[in-house]
Image 1 (cartoon, rainbow, N blue to C red):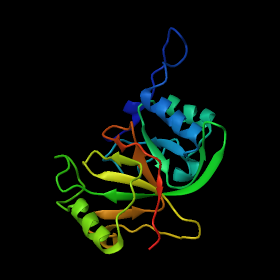
Image 2: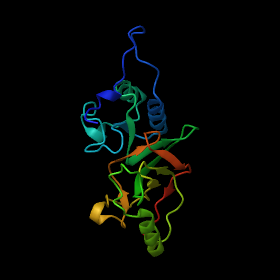
Image 3: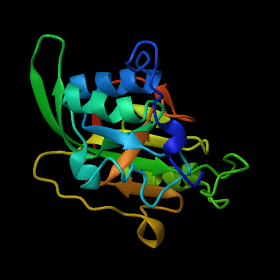
Length: 207
């Protein structure tokens, strides 16, 4: 896809307004209401960058929890994927409380993936994770999203006082297992993404 114009929202000439909110727009609003900063992104596997440059002047730094800005983003690109910025989240509970956490993602690649996947390259991230856990202990059960290439994004919070950086490519935690401490991840219901384990995010064990 050379242009993101195909995701732009058409205007209804009879109503003089735009159609009802899309599924991804509703989900983006829910993320924002929960305290997760989000922004509109190209669909996987398009990258460099993931976010829509024409509407995000400062990239990830324009991601927001503000419902007015989220609606403005998705009113322009109703079918955009949802990017969630990693780092500090101000999670809101149903009783109105706020829990401030720092969120990272452990990105696990699948050796099979989909035929059109540019990722994985035959690397079995699940085997790499098993080997890693054998040396350092198992990761706790945590909120997990499945990716379009049959991998996983496991979201964890960071203990207070612990500083982390991205560990990717040749510096990955293990073959096929990357640590994303900064940047973003695409989240459901972006095309190809689904919630695999809907539980409270666990805290990353200290080394």
